[in-house]
Length: 193
Image 1 (cartoon, rainbow, N blue to C red):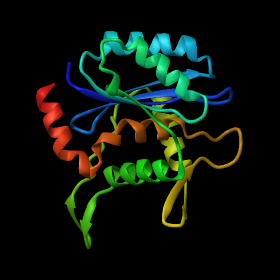
Image 2: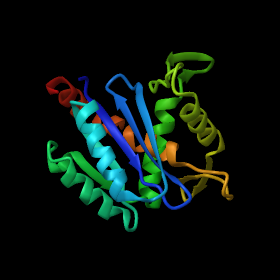
Image 3: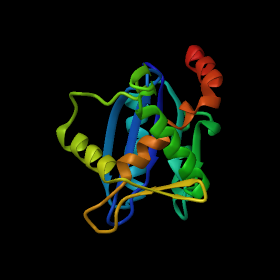
């Protein structure tokens, strides 16, 4: 019943749709994966899962790049128990991916002064979790490549069919409201929920 944030990266024919939930303590609660791009059945399963397993959803951020914005619209209708502004599509542009991955990086790193850790990393990855999904998540995070172009981070998987970034993108979406400028808003929202 604790409030969660949700991130969904829609799959394509050779990728997976990945849904990640994170609570107000920056803990990854769950990760789910669906193969391929059968959005109709995936949306039905996602809506049922969120309705049954997560009573307090603060926000659902979804990749809405290209035709995936239609999937966001359909999901918004299926999640009738949420307000419309709680299901948000984010188009993956240079600017949005820069913001998503800089924020994710900030949450995953210790804040240091020299060698001293002033504040430990906020994002907590469960030590005990489904080994297959955790393995995929860790591999994708390790494989993730960062390029800086005109001051913007471009983060993606390497070329090749064996590489993916679905788990990384889903997590970046799930923690999107944990941006520094959202701290006050999030604090109020979590308190009300």
